[in-house]
Length: 506
Image (cartoon, rainbow, N blue to C red; front, top):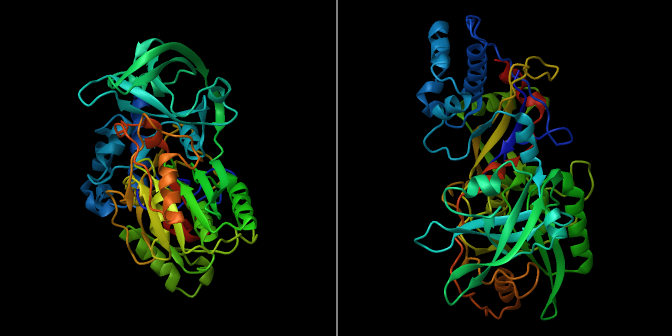
């Protein structure tokens, strides 16, 4: 059986199905997985590959958003059992087989050989030293790289050892960072490494080692608090709320609700929401956040789900029968209460100022796109990731009791839907463009949450009406591939078990 947690990866602002493990707001949905009976062979490893590949094919055939457009995922593929088994055996490595079934437009589906690792990534749990950073070239035409610290997690090893936003790192364990080694050095499995700090020389436009090295140690199962900053700023006599929110995690919904209760009690008149490094997360949390920013749109559509034709037909059949209890809601609505019936605080704002960058994805984009038809969203920064599709986590279960297949630990995260806002807009695969374009500069990152921080200062100038702000000097940062970001930019939503149970058994 395949247990699925509806998880949305969006480069869009959209709604995804989502669940995660244990205390998440999801139900377990089982899918009968009937592996072909003639998969016997003398090599155990080959049998295991066939079994995993069968799990992968069946999951994609049922849920994949582009299923109809991928010839290898056609229902007719299983008409001849012997040919189907041969097809499964053509590709030994499950990851390669999964990739071979992906549509050319699919940038976000992925598979993991260890579902525990996948679950931890989605829950924001990892081995971490608390140093968050991006990596850029030191110059346009060189291979030398610099890692620049974007923020540091409280109560982490990096915080304890004095690492700060704006620090530059050019060596790891004495080895200079370059385009060929930075992924292994910075994103590898090592739980401890030494960073070599550098200063930036604007005259020479170079990064020079200071001679200071700091050894950083990762803590296993470290979970980031997504509320990095929440402040009330005085801007010309106006009370402005500032929230730097770095991931939509429903484990921290209570803290998010309390933050907005505090904002309401303070009587803020404006809100700056900083999502510049937010890769996404829970759709349920996203809906709560949108509802607390507003409050005047309860029960109106926030987002709409667009599934493959198989699932849409199934949902329509459920929704048109005489049994209302099995109806499937394909929309997400603004709400005045959380899932436990607790009233949400509401700011009733007509304008919100959102800081976003190319590291703002999934639920971040969902929030922007979902709010846009209802209130004025002033977007400051640079074009967002462009994740307008959602995925689910699919596990291989062998029964209805939740027992996973003991022969492997693979789970996959295929794209299963596209998300639109209330007026049907979902076409932002190239990202959402800012109203005011501004990129962070290595030489002037500023202190997060202070009025002089470049991106925040732009937002405050819009609120105060001065329209005056200083464009920071220096080269704009153009980050390279970030494996951590690529692995975490997702989003999830609730999906009752009763809705898909019968369909998934087919």
